[in-house]
Amino acid sequence: MPVELRPWRPEDAPHLRRARATSPDLATQLGAVDLSTDEACSEFIAGHLGLSTTATHHAIVSDGVVVGNVGLTHIDRRHDTAWVSYWLSAAARGRGLAAPAAATVARWAFRDLDLYRLELGHRLNNPASCRVATAAGFVPEGVERAKLRYGDERFDVETHARLRTDVPPALEKLSFTPPVPALSG
Image (cartoon, rainbow, N blue to C red):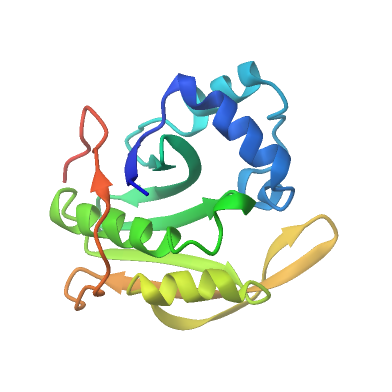
């Protein structure tokens, strides 16, 4: 099963539409945006999953099908930090894809973007995301009470971080195509 990380492309729209349609819980990750058509997905890819000065997103591709995303957002050059996020379609979960994807992007962020600290957070009621974070080398740092609100419900979030000086996890690195033009430190 060849797995690669690469920039999102407009032709990934059907994969994004299918992932969102078959994974209702992705609404919390992707927001209340309409992703019901290929055209809407293509616009979302261009407007939200492309390269910017403060964010970069990478499609997780398994056997030629986009099954998820790992991103760096809130890239802060003053402090050399960024926020890591990831998601997988329901069909791709449990296959061990998210942790190596997060670890691969972290390695790139430290080496090529010259970032020093990467942070991520997960709802306490999402133990699978905690396992991904820990396997990708992110150390738990604490709980932020009632940080996220989805609808009328608030969720506590456990924050994790990984420093450039931390020992990297022993995970297989995925094939990685950086965005062009590449972000640099």
